[in-house]
Image 1: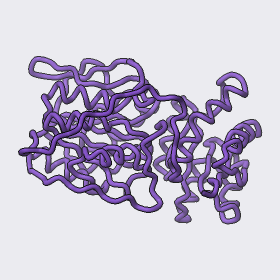
Image 2 (image 1 turned 90 degrees about the horizontal axis):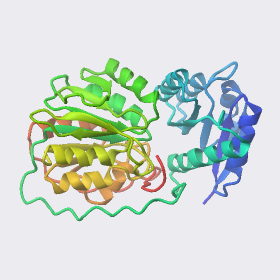
Image 3 (image 1 turned 45 degrees about the vertical axis):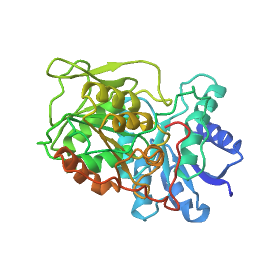
Image 4 (image 1 turned 45 degrees about the horizontal axis):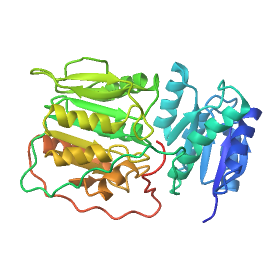
Length: 374
């Protein structure tokens, strides 16, 4: 297999060297060129033909957001990973870049201590995402704690339970997918919605605000102890697991900082498990694009308890890791393209039965990855 051709774009000499050295040390990656700003990067695209670009945001002449827009305007779909800072300004810029067509982001190697620490941070965050977005196998960045596989899910003997709650999980590619999916759902949706998108603190608050502006539904960053009401989307805050806490009559949101699951906090599995317990299995789970397998075990519990699971299909996913893990485990009632999931959600919430859909065959050129980090 040919190495992945990467172009590194950053106005900092130090960052360019750190990223180049880390990537060049991986035998599966070749750094084919660098650029000091977006303008130079755009001019080099035709010559270098990279398989992927790493892109800084703040640069002179043409910043990273402008460069992403220029690349996408030229109908070039090369995957782009942004370098971001974990600040309000960095979150705003990163979400702007994702809206412009960037595929993912990592934390910029700055203010993390020594050069060795910076290099390890880049290695741990960036390499799995490069390989996922280019369809290469991803090994976990650190040894995974052994997690028991989900129990076998028995075939349905009758119709599933009518959902009383909608739970959604997503990761890589999720911001764009959610920005398309949620606006298709009406404010009159008859159930509460809880959502886990793998994102750090600060980012989740701003992302919730952006989604709220796009949607008829009300979208908020989840806080602890809020009653769950129809028509409101609760987005898990960065670095906190979001769960459903059973109550007398009305269930509430719960937040905690228990250990990461599937290398993630927030993680999808704790949300799915808690919803099954609180609603006695009357749960509709939706698993969207993302790296890894977060959500697979939770989907198994939803199915085993009589709930329903919908997974995004491979062709419309940026990375078919999370939904692919659910589909390949035989846990999806339906495997659908993104533009058909809103209709399916409303159909299931209305209690319309659907025969279980056979898994869709992998589509060439798309990543089918259940290992690694988000």
